[in-house]
Image (cartoon, rainbow, N blue to C red; front, top):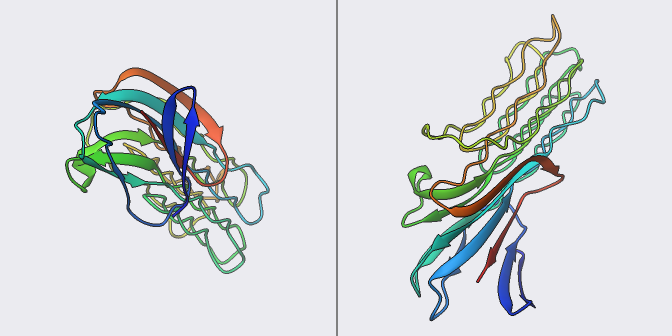
Length: 220
């Protein structure tokens, strides 16, 4: 876990940058409102295409909390690039795995979403989600960027490309991005997962700005 505390203009901040597992934030004494920023992770690159993978989205907003409450933090991992041996593995927290077709046209893995959960650890307790970028195709198409649109549907994680083709994988998000199409035609890149801010206030959503792994920053 990479955890940094710093003082910024009379604010305290924790920054979470390491993917791969559940992390925690305990609300300090006297704090009843926090700001959360979330960046989804980037997708991986298809093996033979050289096309860019999608970048992760960004979302921020404020939420009410109570002292000593515990929020669970999940930082999305970057989707792996494809190799001659197979499609790229999806990033931690929802990235789909890129497709493999025995012709080196293998799709990149989708990035993983970054989210914070309040009151529980299942997906239904997410209060903010930074959507991830999709993986690029192994043939002819770039990955989708992390989505900026909010959604009210229940969240599905990223879906891999067609198993007999070379599509890039979808990125994780509140709604996961869909895997790319077959490389017999145009070999689509995977779609980006959608970001979501739930009931947070003073929200900001931006698509396609984060490279590498995701990040969560909590301000109070």
